[in-house]
Image (cartoon, rainbow, N blue to C red; front, side, top):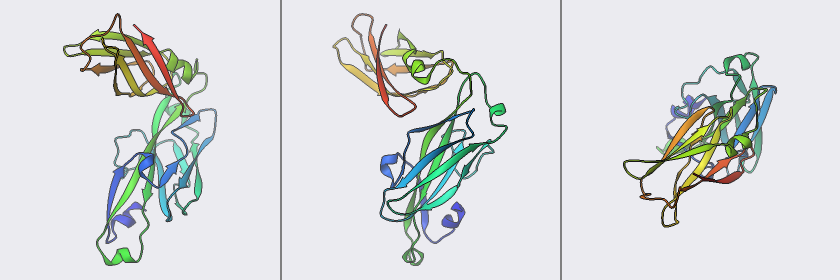
Length: 244
């Protein structure tokens, strides 16, 4: 379907974007599919003034060009749809019978939901060389096996942190001892002057560690204070403070 647009006289340029950049809006910041459930749904709205063609698929990584599709134990219905201006469409994500057997049972797995917003092609486009931009938005999909201990919020609250002096500045090492992923938007380390120095947050996988580097923090007050924001299943931001 995408090749049809690429082969046209217009030039189609693909951009990976945030939801605020495009006319297609996903009504979720993440999708959670429990192994005990057959399906999950996601609604996509067209907030623009023209119809849009939307293509949806899953990938195992966010480092993908979207051209070559993976053989994953999930399928989406419909895989592509036209969404009229100011309207929406519900896409259903189904797991196949062998999905649970292909992923770990002691922790959740993360995949990526790709939403490609392909601009409409008009009759005028066929008569001129125009650059058309296709926007691809990615959000996380967590595949969650049954029987995991604890909850995602408990995982976010239970992260442990260590402060280490680095060659330049400080490192803060976080440990996630839970079976859930914890996605952080921002983290802060308070310097000796009481200023909270911010760096961009990342996702920490189950049973793993992550290191944040603060090169601009020359010294801390006392043992040091660290803050972090994590995101819940519903997309809420929770801010926590950790004293070393």
